[in-house]
Length: 507
Image (tube, rainbow, N blue to C red; front, side, top):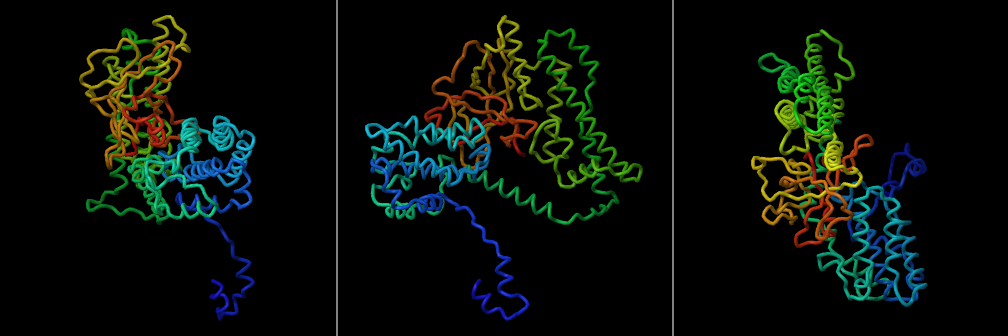
């Protein structure tokens, strides 16, 4: 660039003006190797030799550098990495680096791992973490790196891959050389992730890129088809035909009076029907208005413009998506809406479902609270004394459910992300190649009294309403945590995989 400036023949662009207009930016390093090397370059020789316990310090320092790099690079896996992306910086690392030196100097007889882990994972790095399951992940990593084995074992493995280990003790330069010898491209196993996680993140990046390109493209009026029909009019007409009719609330309330359904569940049903009636009325009204606007009978309002723009790009209009969150395209969303309405229609006009399709509820947390309230009233207990057990039915066929459970409800319609379910053994197992989501069998949401902690051999799997695990400010995506059997792996392994249950997929 300087050579170009010195040889620029055009006097209209003086070098001083160009130099004043230049702004230098520093991009953060990408990849584990670059992040590790960047942190080691911030450590001086004087600081590296300051600690009195030389061998434990060097190994714990490398573990801290690895911990920092893992947290930064894990963000590339999107929701499988962190529910919320966090901006950890070199100041966080520098504070924890000094903390390691202080603790090792103050406690020469034993290393206070518990205090170090708490201050690093909970107070310093954890001070930025706002999601409980992200905090669980941070604690999972720090527990593996700050332990006696990491200090006492030569070439302690940092992941399943042998290429990533704590180097032999030596001067500062040897650690930099060991980092440069690491693979240039990060394998998902280095993070404890499955190779499918790379596919999922690349799909998300591609969707963002495509959406950005579509939003930047000029809006061109659609031409009429060969039959002379406007494509917008045809699409709105098709959607209006697919849109279900609203519920007759008066008839449903009248029929429910003579049925023995529990009162808390009746209340949930009425609330859900009311929300869906508002949504169905809005869809029918806006689509009818667009058809009238195409004939010049009504004016086009900003609300209609938003719906027209969404329909042309096969997306769900902003106003339609307020009833329940979803990332589905318009066609899949309409089919999903029809299935939701069918479930509540059957419940309101036929009988209480023997198994509930849980994704149909706009507020599944309210429904589960009503189930707890039903059990509390039936047994004369306080609702605060109840919690959940989650037996998973070995068969996954909905038609096999012929009777109601004695307590709680049977729930279907869930998908597991980051793993798959072994139907024969009833436990979590490795995802199959190229299979990003796997169906879950029916789960018995069973209220129990006096349960205090998660049973051994299980993984507390969070349930989210849709793939965006953070949800929004108005609507959190988190529903409940389900205890699932971990099989031959550990719960920490599934934590690092970011395994969760989803009520709705993205397509």
